[in-house]
Length: 124
Image 1 (cartoon, rainbow, N blue to C red):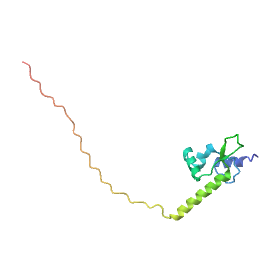
Image 2: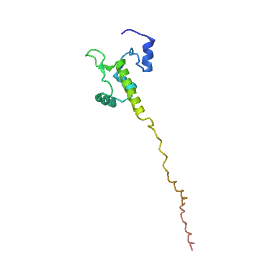
Image 3: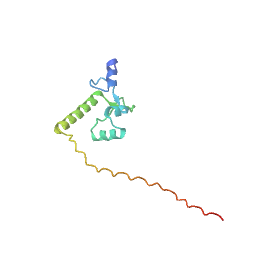
Image 4: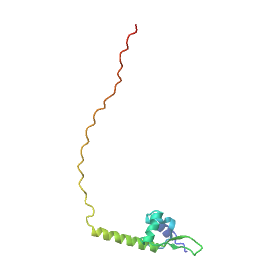
């Protein structure tokens, strides 16, 4: 791969794969990219909500990941879904009035228990 210098470093550190020129994102970086834990990520891949990772090297290698264009396509699809949802529900947040709560009863003063001491009988 050719070295493209500071441009690639800026793309990688910003986590924006807008140009698709950045190094492939490895599967271990998926939490930072997609925001899901490993179990959720596997489930979303099976559902087709997240693109399936590809082998990054010939078969003896086990390294999997995503290329920049795959991440860009996924993000564009998610943004389009969010915009469609927001357009469909223009006033999606309508605050509900607070419920009337009963005021708590005032606390009763605690009764202090006193031990009664009986007078002793005089000896004699």
